[in-house]
Image (cartoon, rainbow, N blue to C red):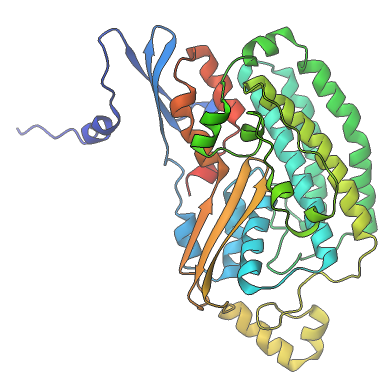
Amino acid sequence: MTQQPNRLRPFYENIAFERDDNTMILNFGPQHPSAHGQMNLILELQGEEVKKARPNIGFLHRGIEKMAENMIYNEFLPTTDRMDYINATSNNYGFALAVETLLGIEAPRRAQAIRLALLELSRVCSHLFFLSTHALDVGAMSMMLYPFREREYALDLFEEYCGARLTHNSIRIGGVPLDFTPEWIAQCEAFLDHMPKQIEMYDALLKENRIWRMRLENIGIIDKELAMSWGVSGVMLRASGVAWDIRKEQPYELYKEVKFDVPVTDTCDCYGRYRLYIEEIWQSIKLIRQALEIYKDTPPELMANAPEYISASKEELMTQNYSLMRHFVLVTQGMRPPKGEVYVATESPKGELGFFIASDGDPYPRRVKVRGASFFHCGILEDLLVGAQLADVVSIIGNTNVIFGEIDR
């Protein structure tokens, strides 16, 4: 009887370490809850100290970028919800803005105000989710309940606006699908009035908690050089003393007009990054209020006027035969953008989210490439975990705030 070959051997040979006899290889995952998705982290330990680390990704790969090349532009837009599924709106917006740049069109001012409000509300949801899950990873179990409560209120607003809570498709190429109602604005303003007291409560639970500080201070140090060499962005970069926020440095749409601060710290550790997430919630509340003020002074236009690429309004579809015919062509065959290539970057809650689109003038893009911040924040673990204690690995992974739907594309 012939012996069957070991089909797993090539896999392990590719990732095995050259190691001394007094070290141990530990597989962290791929189902570990602190991995924020499916990741296999291969650690070489000497006692409790990490000597080498190798993130092994790909367990959630769905071929999203390849799917984009086989869908018309509007057809692909809902698929972006499934990348960073904690923050669907930023994914929708990043792709829509890239397509609009390719087309050379701009959303109406009211649509931009709605987009700004939804983007910052989604940022609040994402940061609240981070606070809850990170605290739970570290061991602060009661903390999970409070930010999740406020996050549910914010998700109620998304459900009221577009009918979905998690993978909500709230942005369209050329504008937004729906207008705000007076009731929605009132509910949103009530939520904004409710949040400051809750943020102060989060601070009371964690800011000076000696166990929390012992688990985060001087842990997961990312100095400026390491951050720049790995291409990290967002809070991960700003916690290393680099004041870089795309909304400020390369402002898009209404971010050119609104006023907000970019929180920065040079502590370079997990505690500093946690503090920045708290501060960013304050800034998002300020931005939503400004967006609502801008909204009140804008004409009621929600979609760009570009008949070659964007369907006409419902009123025109019901009264003008030519508009209805063009709408039928756009839905069944798709738009035909000009030939060219664009890369558009936006500031998502995780960091820089960029979309590269190459067009040959066909209804289907020739190439779509996504630059997700989580991919770089996962890769840095290869350097970041070296020298850390095994007990701190969970804290560091949770603090990077990676989402594997954004990594495994």
